[in-house]
Length: 416
Image (tube, helix red, strand yellow):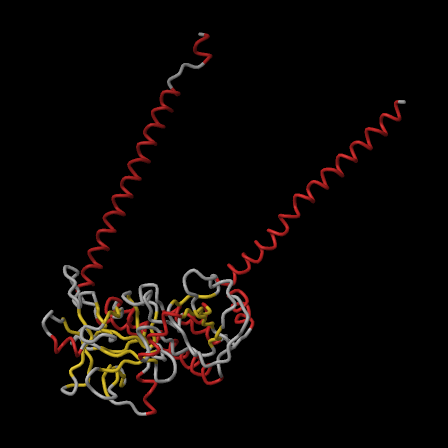
């Protein structure tokens, strides 16, 4: 009977284990369904993390759209297509299904521009922009910026296709082009960050201001705007504008249109036909544009340049862009050329810094060196004397102890 009890106990134990396994399986079934849904959600969240949302914007709606795709499927397809840098989708009206689950038309973005918003484009494009939203791959977002409600009224930097930045000249408040390394080297960040605001003169236009003081003093911060004075002069410059200065307000208001090279943006001045912002060398000017000058009239919105913009970061960014498989051979060649220019510019800055140190050296520094040497010698002598006195004191103490030991009576003398 004892053996039977052992068998029954073993069978009971096995039965309990089977029951526990069955219960766990039943409990895991709904979890597995929810788990699949959670996995899909996590996949979508991971997918959308690779894109930057640009609300109220659209790119080329003339491309063949992708049909019957929700947002997750569209983003996944774009991620798998090397020539796709993002997607544009039409917004849903309030009260209908969400943008994520709706199978609306998806327009792949196959070039870096133009990005149409209510601030950039013709009247029809500006009116359509609020009905769309675009998602741009983050690896392309640094060079594809849309001027919408999120970006306008915030500080931005503006650059040419060759990565030269707008910057205010300290001497005459004119608008120049400088490399990021020059701006960083001379601490000109406040003069290279601008803010796009609603036009001072005409509805639908924009004005560009600098809300930092143009002097080295930080006690006041007057607002300066970019203005032109064509046809008296072609150069663009900054000027403070009063409330009743309507003529200056007109000269500080511009029409922002898609870039003439089908990316970026271009600015036209109001009151003159076909007069654009353009650069000649390092100078920012206004004038007519020939076909060969279209690139000189096209600019790009960039993340505000700051202390963190260094030569090493620029080189890394350029190197990363060179590795981009989507670049055409011509674009890759330009990036390689830019890499060489960055390297040469870095060397030039180092040489100029050394020359400054040499030129700023004065013979009075020799006297300073002599004074520092004498001070160092005095401190060394005091240190040596202090060390000598401490050692002498230790020797004297030791001598006293030895003398007291010598004075202790010996055992033999005590016996006597």
